[in-house]
Image 1 (tube, rainbow, N blue to C red):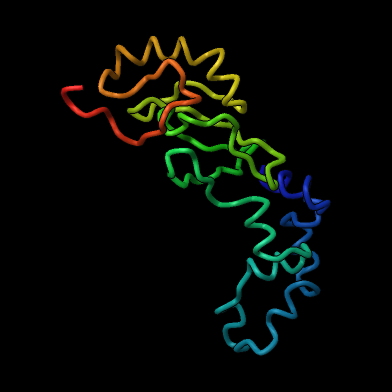
Image 2: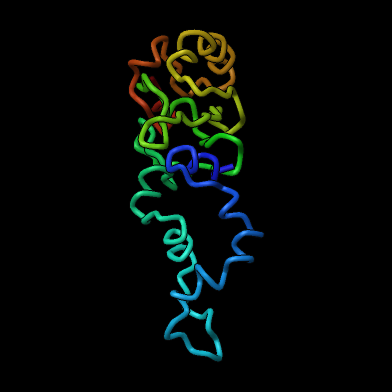
Length: 173
């Protein structure tokens, strides 16, 4: 899961942030964030994410740099990264990746995300963690299949050098 992604880069033991460990040690790590709280509702207004980041010895900027919530793809879309699987993933339409010569990555570029490439209708087409290899090996077959199914969308012969798009081709072209 996402904790492995962060721990690989920061050296933090994910077990120290497990539910069991957090519950066991809550008096130690949570107390500084409860000082001055209303005794009738001590958790109201608590910034739990700040407390957890402090416990891990991280600041929000470091986490955002290492494991961003969204990544920008060549089309300019900023897509949500899913950290719930073993490796970080994003779902993206093939046309939005045109022009890409390398796979988007997290951990300051050290961990390529797994791309779930989608048809124009949002249906799965291919899964890859190496977009350059996909363009060279699998894309020609995907292109043949998709051109017939989605003729209003571009399917260039050289996708690595094509212009990315979020739209279909204009009518009459």
